[in-house]
Image (tube, rainbow, N blue to C red; front, side, top):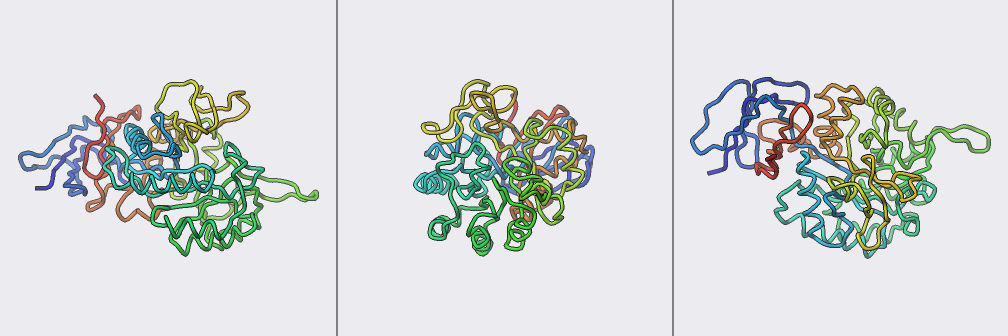
Length: 397
């Protein structure tokens, strides 16, 4: 017999509305029934009284580096499991583990660790496939990425990576203006890997070429990318303006209220709308941890940072060095800071990222037959239950 879970007395958030006094039944790892009012279930069913709180599809984070004191670049399998468990406490049911620029050996080790970790029951968020952030970036837009590892796309290198670990890679972020970057984008698309623009000084004309070659997503919009600039006295639109101008381009945003203040959150929402925006944490190991000293990247060789005021900073406080956001905080910020309707804020954390990653047929919305990935949260956006594929992985005590 497949396990049954009944969640009742819920405000059920679908992709487009809220159903009050609703019930949802999970059977095994799938959603079995959704509707208004009460419904009878067999004896032995686990019944959860949502007590009038919100129930939505589980949150999907397509760009996250770490959390709970661990980082995916730490070099061990347990770090993957620890991050997945940590973010599940905040409603994340699926995530794309994300790398930092590194030596090729470090990248291969991380990909091997992912392969092994993805086959284990991590008691946390589902691992959706790796997001490789770098090393093909513009040095001028390195940000917190280690500049000594930044380089132009090398066909021998990236083809080796894809041929050995292509099944583990869901997306790859790069600067499209670099020599060989357009061919790189085409190769990614041919191998069913999402190509994204990141850490780039491209101008509009270069972005158009990149989109024509398959690049479809702007990685952490506004962070590590060009805006309006001058070249030989002439003014050019950068990647930010390009993302606004090209209707078909998706964007992801770090909606922690710090990387992007409320006016920019409102601007992005006004121009792109909820169906083109994915909320991301871009979180490092400090997410879910006390403030103080921390490390961005590998625990032994990474960048020393300090966490304060809800964000990671360089020790001299001259710049941000990573996010410590959680997905429930992102949804809360879009509602309270950007004044976005709750249904649309949730959609940007569920169905929209699922569509971007090509998994919206199974994840991202509460629909009969889809995966039983569910989060229950209250009016303060505190997570009460997180359910991944029909398994309760977090319950607030």
